[in-house]
Image 1 (tube, protein in one colour):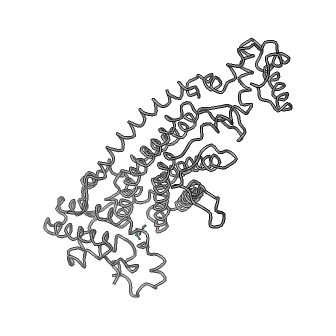
Image 2 (cartoon, rainbow, N blue to C red):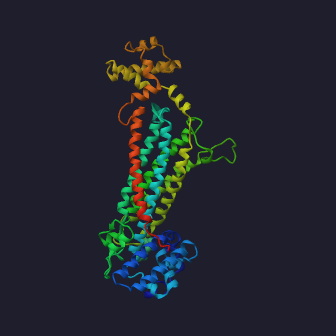
Image 3 (cartoon, helix red, strand yellow):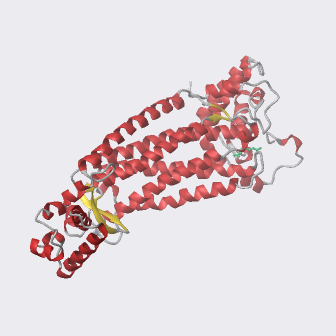
Length: 476
Ligand code: ARG
């Protein structure tokens, strides 16, 4: 007999059970479901809705059920559809009919919204922590490469030299926005929907705030219809996760390029590469490729959930059960990628000399020759044209700017003097970008000082929020 079997005269078709059941995937919510139920049952007794002694029996039973599920000792069945009804069934098996009092004043609709939020807020803290570790790895590489010059690219053509530290810091700031987005979204996740009932609230004199406080929520969802219908927080997470994936993927692409023989700028540690079953010489950047590849599934989950929610009338609809697999998979996908990323970056060998050669044997100092002429009062547009001529001459001669003699320079412009050689050296070119946020060494150092302050904020946020989550447990 189903928990809701009273008004039915026939058993459910087996295919229906299989098709509609979510227990296959929502068993991930077991821990949160039980945490939520413990708070709910305590509230029921406190409000005089069920006797204190029943609440104690139920709480004890819930903890046993929770431990059994986590130990893999409980039988979870599709006949019982989802984690909520499986837990209730196991509870009744454990403590008898008094277990049937647990669901007083509650619906699976507010219950599942609660579980999702409890799950996600924990994931937000874990992912933030992992992002911070990736930032730290990038920061360390920046610190070690404050004198490493490499070509900066636009259109994947060498453009102007930059410090490798500057390049690493670009990703540090990208991931900083990710951390801040996750932290900001936490406020919207951390609101308790419990007490919304099926959709309209409940006739029992419950105390929603008590439950919210017990579970360390920041507040309660203000409108019961919204509380059970809202999956914005899932979409917001998937959207934020998509940006994390985009950032990881861009960095992955650079790692793949940089580790190719064509670039030869970095070597990824053997521990983070794999070989070919056929070609003995191969060392493939599989991790970077796979992280890049998994971006597709994360974006897919975002589009999937946006589409599922579109056009759903209020309040709960079974469609919303589709919120889970994409969210779980996204969390797991990011956790897996981030866990590998920090050590992969940390152990990456930066081939400073190769990077330097790519700058020295190139025309990426051409802008600086133009800027030099501007310094001698030539309008920038004219300077641009002169330098274009110089570069063309060099290309034809198989030379670089610094290979030209002063006489040769002066055939293009008499404004050029012998101090041009200092101006055009890679180091000078980099340090000339002495503007806030620029690639000059002192400006990159400024960025790093700023980042260290941001790291402190991140750590403080993580500490406060990790405590919120760890503050309760159903284990005795
Ligand atoms: N398994 C359901 C879900 O994940 C729980 C809520 C079901 N509510 C209902 N009235 N059928 O969405």
